[in-house]
Image (cartoon, rainbow, N blue to C red):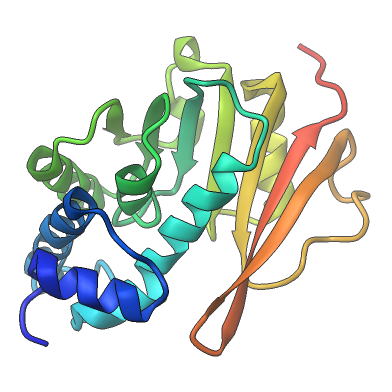
Length: 217
């Protein structure tokens, strides 16, 4: 298959069940080229084969984009991606879903440097990186309409952080490898808004969408 050219990226995506627009293929190609270049010097992702990155990681982003379209979010939501790592799912997500302001929060300096480099290449609108602990995000940037997290902290801890930082009708999304909890005893004051599953190869992954029952400010 060779290098991740736009044409090759589009062909792989098609085999994975996604038809890409020309600009989507171009932007994903730029991201993959940057990711593979930086991955030689630091351990950003486990795979050095861009096709594995597509099938195992970027698929999350287009499924997440579809899921976000189904949620009752404002037209221009204020969004935070906690523990963004190498920009997955965040950067590819913004290729498919570019509503509102999207901030990726990451404390590890090398990953922050990579994401800023990638964003300088892709020039994604209203997409930024905050190089700090989530607790140190400037309070004036809140409240958020959307907070999402993948393997950042245990989900009750993510909801505990999100509670005072979300709008009353805001949504917190957990990217998970198991079904959503059936009980909210670990996170009182929250309710499960929706949950959806999707397949990545022979694995099943999930999005859990929570919304606050009530928030004390």
